[in-house]
Amino acid sequence: MAPSVANVLPSTSELKEKAELKLNKAYDTAQHAAYKYTNYLPVYDETTTFPPTEPFEFSDKGILADKAKPHLLGLNDPNVVVTKLTPRVGTEITGLQLSELTDEQKNELALLIAERGVVVFRGQNFKDIGVEKQKEFGQYFGRLHVHPVGAHVEGAIEFHNIYLGPDNLYRAQRRSEKLTTTGYHSDVSYEHQPPGITLLTLLAVPSTGGDTAWTSQVAAYERLSEPIKTLLEGLRAEHSGFPQAENARRDGKFVRREPVKSHHPVVRVHPVTGQKALFVNPGFTKKIIGLKAEESDAILQLLFKHISQSADVQVRVKWDDQTVSLWDNRVTAHTAISDYDVHNEEEGLRHGFRITTLAERPVGVNGLETVW
Image (cartoon, rainbow, N blue to C red; front, top):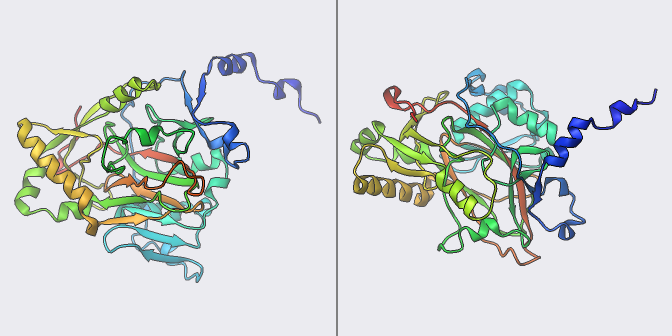
């Protein structure tokens, strides 16, 4: 039987909603006429707004995992290869498709990400399974975050668009006055319940360059002297989304959620592993609560330098267009490395999308909680 007209045509309310929605394309259509992933190119919804994120209950999937991870790491399949990228941070897996993982495997993956900071999957079909399945995969690990100011994928405002090409240099211009393009951060750490697991896949990669680096905040904490650890464990720091929103407005970008500040423990405890990790980052941490300005600045600069420069607790990952990386923002800081010539066609375009899940309200040592 042929479908009825009512089932084919959009309703009046749907047409009105589409007419009112203002999407600003952040790319040159002509330049991407032959691009396979045009439906993932960056757009800005300049209509939809969101209220502040309300508190919600969160249960980490890693709690459900068998600590031995037999369904993920004990398959006795010669095609599945698991490699530690460095002693303290980063594991690479080949021979397993994220799109085909069972719930048991996803639970064990959540635990592995918490333990190793970042897990890199090679040879993936994830970018070709469609928006709904991609979204469903992310939602398994937690509530999806909507970035307050960033570009996104059309029809999937939860997919934060990662794009740097000659037709959109915004990400590069923001750092053009600095000596380095790197900037370590934990994703949107200003949120009252900041992210747990983030997934990033690239659809197009430069022929060389465009790597991502991660620092283990667990190892960084462990390197500190005992007196400094004791001091930090009793402190909270302010993480602010206000500069990000103000910069976006200055640059003519739409702010879809008003900014917030949170006072997070400087040292947080992971709810599954129990590991202590530094929870400050140069991207969003502004000051330590209760200290004089000079004291706060001195301690934060010490920690930022430690996080950014301690190569012996870091891992640097080279991308290809079949790689998916997942990391735990509660125990890592990361940075993109924009070292390629975006104007050089031979070096190419760096384009992908990020799915970020929100997690628990941070808790530090002796139950020190986030406040706002």
